[in-house]
Length: 222
Picture (cartoon, one colour):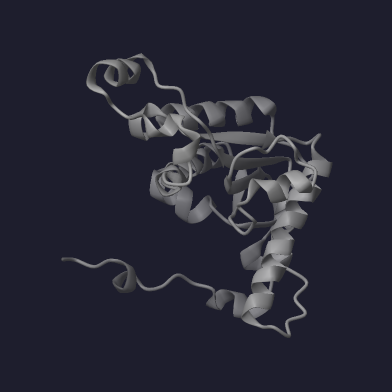
């Protein structure tokens, strides 16, 4: 299947996954393929991917609650009288075979860049804790590239994916919730498995109105 057709016809936001679990071999291969083909500034890859598998249901419930609490807080900010109960479409975060969360990471320069540091006074910002807040935007772009590549490789194996970026980015929130292995800023998350129900199939006719802006509103020729 061509790349466009793969993404246009197979990429669907999952509302609920089936109980079937993709093989670990397919997951590992897809991760390797994404790692192999995703570019990175200075080859640093200043992020890491936590894989929460089928045996991490308790942790997924915690992450789900972090996301729902974030949604509720945002609703309250916009409507002070809101009685929001969160977003039902976040169900995929707790009901999935595999959840991937992306976090910032301190990087170690490879031999080439270490030579540049030693001989050319290059400043390798990805190796310094103090620089992490400053480079979060560029690292987030790289995470998006990795996630998109991972999406493609999973779809090629008939494995569905869903995305989420509604959560507190302060890692202290995650630690206080019980996820003490999270020590840097969370950036993004992706779930995968075999879809049972898709977001486009729930919500009735109004759901068909949830469409992208027109191309002319996005692309500007200068």
